[in-house]
Each structure stands twice: as C-alpha cells, then as structure tokens.
Image (cartoon, rainbow, N blue to C red; front, side, top):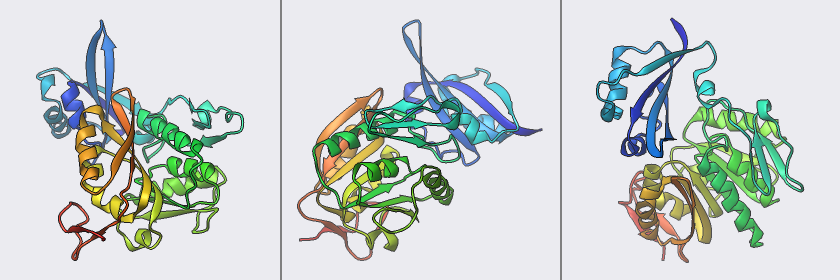
Length: 317
C-alpha cells in the first residue's frame, strides 16, 4: 500500500538524545518528551512513505532498545507528503520582533516587526522548534546592543528563516545562507520569494549556496563574516568549529543552536580550542543556544585542509 505512515515507539531520554535526524535515510525521525503522572517519558516517531516492514521496525528497535518487546504503534496517515505531515499543525511563534507562521495559522507581525510565512515542508527549522525560537531571541538581543554587522552567514540554513531575520535586523548587511542539502536551498529560495526577499549577491539580497561545510570557495570568497549562525546538531557544531572560526572576522559573533544542555561543555570546548569565547547561554527546555565571540586572530586551514575535523588547522598569526 502506498501513502505516508507513522511508527511510534517508547524510548528513554538518553536514547532520544543519541538519535540523529538523519540516522535512517528513508524516514524522518522525531523525539518528543511527554510528562504523565509527574513522570518524564519519551517517544520516538518515525515518518515514512511506505508501509513499515520488519527491517524498518528492527532498525527503530535498535535506536530504542529500552522499548523491549513493546509493540510499535503503526498509523497510516494517507497520501499527503510524509515530511510535511511530520511537521503539520505547528502553532505560530511570536517574539518581540518577529512572528513565524504557516498559512494555516496566519498571524500579524508584532508592531514595528516582521512576520514570516514558513510552511511545514521538506526542510527543517520552521521556527517552531525551541532552538530556532531561541536563535531569533538571541539575534534580537544582539541587534539591541546597536552592533553593526557587514557580513552574515547562516550555516545549515534549512528553511532560510534565521537568515531572513538577520536581514531584517541588519539592513544593508551582506547575507549568505548555506546548506549541504540542495532541497533545503530550494525550499529557502521558495520561502524567500514568499516573503518578498530577493535571492542574489547584493546587499539587499540573500545569497543561497549549496555547500558541505563552511569552506567551499563560494563561502570563503565572501568571508570574513561578522555574524555566524549555525542551528544544526551538536556533532556537526563540534566538527565545524575550525571551519567557522576560519571564516569569522576577529571579534565576530557566533550563534550556535541544536545542542542539548548535556552537550554544552563539549561544544564550548571545541570553539575555545579555536580561540572563541562564550558570551552567553540561553536555556530553552532541554536545549541551549550559545553566543560566542571569535578570537582576535583568525584561524586558517593548513594544507591540505581537513574540513571534517580539527587536524590540519593552524592559527593565522
């Protein structure tokens, strides 16, 4: 049978924290915390576009071994897009400056602010997740200091939302949005058009770049950046620390998200090793948003560069 399906298994918090959204290529994985009878419970939801078979169920049990012999809950959702269904029903979020909504839950912009239409779809980062919400607030606080920024990059942009918000906060800045997934960049391009934002390389346009990491020629050609945003996962944040430090201007602001509270020390240590210092940490639920400052000297890759680790990096003195 064709259509979209959802498989649900109970899991522990440790299992939920260990799950990478890209662990299974044919499924969208989401973990959710539930509180019942004052007890913390977690569940794993897998959205797939085919009827679940034993191989898929076995793979999910590997991710949630605590489920034991519990029968997974399997639901047929219909013929709609399976990833869209996984994010459907998201309520708008509203900060002091921004409102983020889908067409099904339209809201007005805050007074003097901006509303962004971001449909649930194939790229994550709709703004309804605590990490993206926290990033918006972090950017608002940074802008409130009166700091002027000339070049901004959003690495792992997803829907493009954080790059759009940065363009609104720092009018005239040169803004770049990049993602490893070409589909995400196409979604960001569509979202830009839906929100009246032009794609291009000018100061009033957003440059959309498909790139694996932050050291592609198209990205380094626009460096150094005064603000770097990366709302991804803790693992990529750690591995990309030398890359982001390499393209950061001395004293640049670096906003990082997608990490759990338990992963803060590891991420901060990785960036400290590249000369970056922690300025503030904003906890939202189980997630933490960090703002760091790049060191007074820039990191550059030694030859040959290793874009996935810290080996092969040196200080530019």
